[in-house]
Image (tube, rainbow, N blue to C red; front, side, top):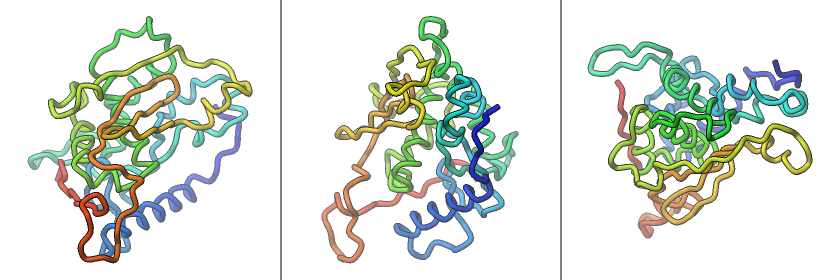
Length: 252
């Protein structure tokens, strides 16, 4: 159990809700006051229908060395976002579990824990491991750049992959289907401190994002650079300065 006092979780949820709502309002000014879009399924949800999600799973950060857990809060080591817990319904049939939050926990958290806390040679790698890192990488990308990466063609592809946990979709570029891994760090010192403090290191490289999550390195597709400022006043602007929103959803 972590011994560092956590920030009040209800307050964190409220802060994230406001940040995400302000972000989506910057792209869709008429968006309702009391709703968000879940970054995974993109359904409209209320405050009561979302919950805090630890991007690096709680079961994974609970295995961090004692000195790390005593020095750095769980929230810092895992990264946070909001996911819906509104039941998923596909073709009229409910999917067991509590929305996208439950989907992530069921399909990805165990594989992520194994990857982050095992020597590479001891892991029997399969497609679920790779897709799991892709999925948490997408949430890390969203936590950094918000709906700017969600409401794009590459965002739609990553959201579709989130709901295809057992194998990669054909549209996912080959280089985004690979993971480079190293031995996990097992101590806390001045040299390794940033390894624990900053759970996601993201570098933009042309049409992709290089994502480092602890000892894992992989790529995610990007159809546009999320750091390029968007024009918000002019009626006509070049393509690279406007956002062509893609609001497709997967579940009802």
